[in-house]
Picture 1 (cartoon, one colour):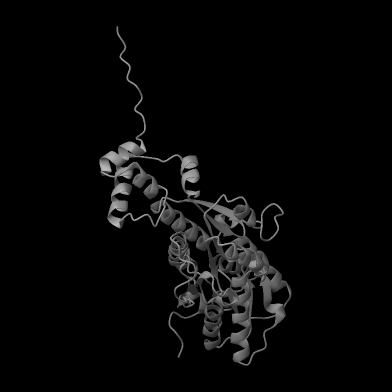
Picture 2: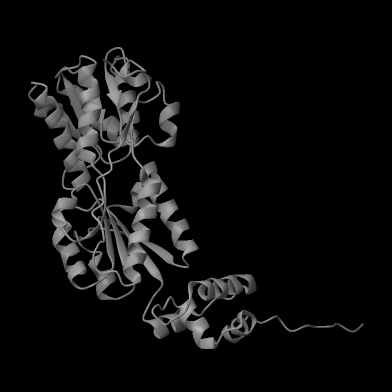
Length: 356
C-alpha cells in the first residue's frame, strides 16, 4: 500500500497579504506594525487588516518590534495580582481591557506593584527595559506620583485611573469622584437617621481611591454635625475574608454603631457575616452600604445597597486615551469630568426608596 503524504501548509506571508489586498508589502508592513503618518488611508488600513485576519496572517513579533520600535504590548499596573481572585471590579476592568486590546491587535500584561517584597514604583522596570509601548495604572499609591511624573516626562504613553486628577495636571487620566461617591453613600445612611456610622476600608489609605473614600466618610459626618470616631474605622484588604476580620476587630472594641459603610462590596459581604455571628441583624440592627455594585451584590442576603461604579467604561476609555498617544497626541485635548458612582438602593440599609 502506498502512503500519500502532503506537505504541511505553510502560514501566509506578508507578500501574500499584499497581493490579495492589492497593496505593496511596505504598506502591509506599516499597517500591521501600527506605523502612522505614512499617507495610508483608513479604508486601505482597514482592508489590509481584514485580509490579514481572513488569511490568518500572524506577523513575527521580533520582526515587528525591530521594524517599528513597537512591542505591541500594553501593561496594566495594579497593586496586587492576587486581588484578581477576590475583587470583581478589578476582574471586570482586566477582562474589558484585555478584550479591547485584542480588538486593537495589542497584547496586555499585568504588572503588580506589591508582590514578593517589591517596592512602590517597581513597574518602572517595564519602562526602563522598553518591554511595553504604554502603561495604564489603576489605583496608584499616593507615593507613586513621582514615578508617574518620570514616565510622563520621558514621553512614555501613560493613562492613570485616579481619584485625584488635580494632583496629575497634564496627564491622561480616567478620573472618578470617589470622594463625592463615598460622601453620598454616608449621607444616605445619615438621611435614614443613623449617627454612628462605621467605615471598613477595602485597603490601606496609601492608595488614592482608599484615601478619598475615607475623606468622603469623614466629610459627610462632619457636615451633619457628627464628629468622625477613629474607633469606628478599620482597614481590610479587598476580600470578603478580610472584611469579615476587620469587622470583628471593630466589634471587639465595644464601640456601638448602627450603620456601616464598606469600601467595596466584597468587604460588605464579610462584614455581614461578622455582624450575624455577633447576633446583629442586617439591616434591623446595622444598616450597610457597599461600593461598586458588583454583579452578585443584588443577590446578597439581604440585597446590598451600594454605589455603582463603571469598570467597563473606565477600561475602554483608558485604552482609547492610550491609543491617542500612540497616534501622536501629546497632551489631553479636554479635561475629563470626574465620574461619580450612582447610589443603588436595596434592602441592606432598611429601605428600598430614597428618604425625603
